[in-house]
Image 1 (spheres, rainbow, N blue to C red):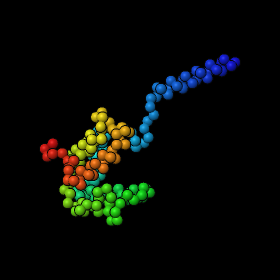
Image 2 (tube, one colour):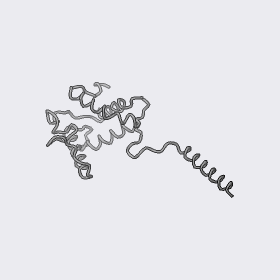
Image 3 (tube, helix red, strand yellow):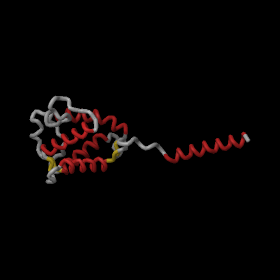
Image 4 (cartoon, rainbow, N blue to C red):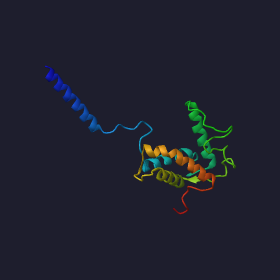
Length: 163
């Protein structure tokens, strides 16, 4: 009887191990899945469509500010806290943070918006495999800091005209 029971336990554990190996690695947590270049551009396109309130194919400084205000209000409504760092500012480059109040920025086309998203993806994808993984995602915060420094120094991440 003991040999039979022991054999059943060994067989069950072998079956469980084989099933676990066949399933592969567990899926990433929601919101942390690997991001492909196509997904990043699709997300940028969707964001552009949301920002382009008058559907003229351009996002003006006013439309961008309205979008940021709406996102800020949604975050507050969900209990996400207020990310503003300065009184009266919108945080993260909003209207209250710049020398010109953010209003001197020209309108941006969808093609330019998508090109910037693709460029950010390419900078984040440090191993150039076409996918942003957990390691690259962890390094992205430092890259954002460097991007903000570049913008402050007048360096643009926009593609050259005609590209």
